[in-house]
Amino acid sequence: MQARTRLAEWMRHTQVKMKLKQKLIGSFAVVLLFMAILGLTDMVRMKNMKQDMTEIAQNWMAGTQLIQEFSYLTEHIAKDLVGVHNQMDTSVKLELARDIQATMSKGDKAIESYGKTLANEEDEKNYNMILEQWGNLQSNYLKYSKATDQIELIRLYDELTQSYNFVQTICRKMVAFNQQGADDSVEKNAVAYRSSIVSGVSLLILAVLISVVITWVIVRNMTRPVIAASHVLDRMAEGDLTVSELQFTNKDEIGVLVQAVNGMMRQMREVMARMQESSSAVASSSEQLYASSEQNSEASQHVAVDIQTIATEAETQRINALECARAMDEITIGVQRIAETTSDVSDLSAHASEQARNGQADVQHVTMSMNALSSVVTQANQTIHQLAEHSQNIGKVSQMIGEIATQTNLLALNAAIEAARAGEAGKGFAVVAEEVRKLATQTGESVGAIRGVVTSIQQDTQEAVKAMDAGLAEVQKGLQSVDRTELSFQAIVRSAEEVASKIQETAAAAQQMAASSQQVAATVTNMEHVAKITSELSQSVAGATEEQLASSQEVTSSSQMLASIAQDLQDVINTYKMN
Image 1 (cartoon, rainbow, N blue to C red):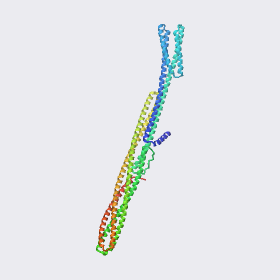
Image 2 (cartoon, rainbow, N blue to C red):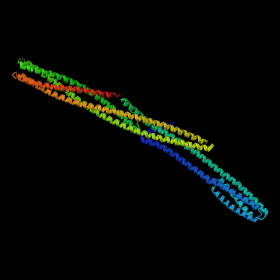
Image 3 (tube, one colour):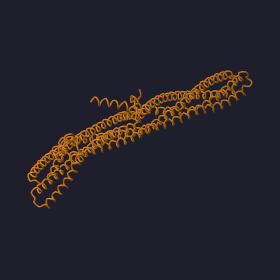
Image 4 (spheres, rainbow, N blue to C red):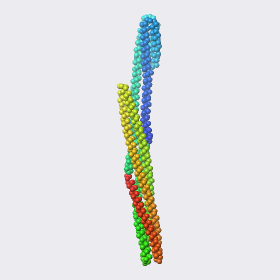
């Protein structure tokens, strides 16, 4: 258990620095390495078994065959000796003697061939004993064939019989020795075969276990960041930007995905914060612009009233010169009020124009940020699609492992059949084969579980793709809203510039009125002329005032539209939760 834990820990640290492709190739290479070791081990054992079988065929079986042939030849010689000893016909004796000589020649070849198959000292000792008795039998037969005395023939025949019996005894002993050697070699070969099966099955089980551990570690290291990234993306799609950043240090494609998600989250936080600030500034500027336009309208109305007063006073000057001084005082006061009001309106208009330009700059910054956010979201979407392709490759690797487990199950079944054929000697091996079959079945079930996990990964990845698509759509909507806001700001800036231009015209008219008032105050004799000029100027100022009032109304309408757009932008931003 501790070794497995250390192996998993080592693999985790190693995989942090590996690419996804390297992980998959490395795990498959480990499995192939174990399979190669298993195959080479079986080849070595099969080679040893082949050598043992060769020894049985060339030494023990050949030796047994040669000794049995030699024993048969000696029996044939003994049979011919009986015929020679009991036969009276000389021609028959000669025929039997020739047959004995031919049989002895065959015996010499057989015993000489057996000398090439000696296995150990005991075999060599028996071989020397049979050579000695064989030589005695041949020498006694030579004496027997030359003897003529009946008593001598009987004695030599008895010695030949004793030599034959001794040779047969040694032959039976040597046959038993060779059979025992063959049995020992067969038993040794059987033990080696059983050992080969046990070790091969053990290596196979070890390879399967290590493959399962490697697969489990790889799948776990891949699924944890993906599930966490999917959870973060779901939270972000729901508008929650308060979720913590992912804490994974993988250097593979999944690590790149995690870093991309973290970067997208940070970028969205910054963009939302800047958009919130900009929308607040836009709302404030629109309120100030609205207030300025209201003040401008009120001032324009006052100017219109003053112009009417000036016109009335001009007509009065024409009618009654006695009221000229008082009318001039009123005109002077009206002109001063116009100048003051025009100055205030000019300042407010300049301020409103500046605020509108600032709002337009803020909207441009928001547009740039939204474009950057769209790029980040698009990149994350592409990364998640790549992750989906990698999960498909993982499914293929899991299917390959399942096929290996199925082949292992078939091998275990074949081994069980072979053990059943072996009878009692294969019972122990049958138990091992059954255990291998169970482990192969469990491996198949584990592969099924892995396929389930890979399927879950693919489903989660699809959900993440949907979430990224939804986020991208929301970003596109935000870009459209920002574009509309920028167009509104451009209209507001143009209106503010027009208001400033009209106010400058009003200021010029007020200055002209002040000059005219001074001229009227300097000379009463030209009062009628001055009154006429004043009337003309009053009409000009009235027209300018009407234009200013219309511009103020346009500014008011634009400021209301800007406030509405700023509120819409604020509502969009409020859908995201931030710290």
